[in-house]
Image 1: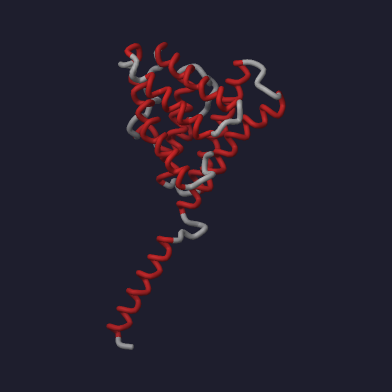
Image 2 (image 1 turned 180 degrees about the horizontal axis):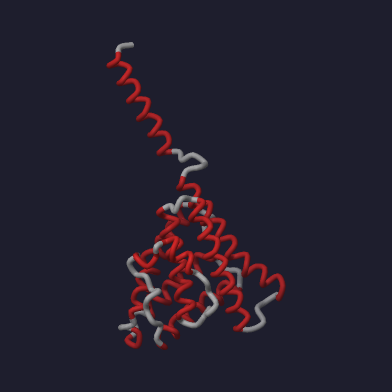
Length: 216
């Protein structure tokens, strides 16, 4: 085989291998790691609600329901932070984690979950540099009412072991409506978070339709 033929053969082989890998990601590919991590973190999140129901039958009061919710969101954030390092900070996992982080920040700033801890996740995502970051915004009374209301709608659904994706869709719809109300029309934190919910939240739901079982 001449050197020219050898070069052509090598090029064709390289393209063929690249093509196969592109169509069939290996078990260690970043994409598979990301989806498996998201699936695991969603399971951990839902398990907090399931375990609470197993112990109490039903949530004994609104206060207890919020305690369960706050524990679940913190579990979600902690799991995603661990997953980021395991999956080399994959782009899709980072976007997904940013949505959950922003949700956690809203919980804390608006008084729903004052004990949330997420500073290390902010650092891992370099969240302060991202568009729509709400960590520097105040949560005025109007925004507090909106967030508490939308969280409670979400909680009522989760208490009945409903489909998580339907619950998320209702949360997104709740924020979409709230952002259009005159009382909150000029709240920066509501505008940012509502936009994030509508764009990234909808994308999360679309990805679950492509990869059944990732979230729901």
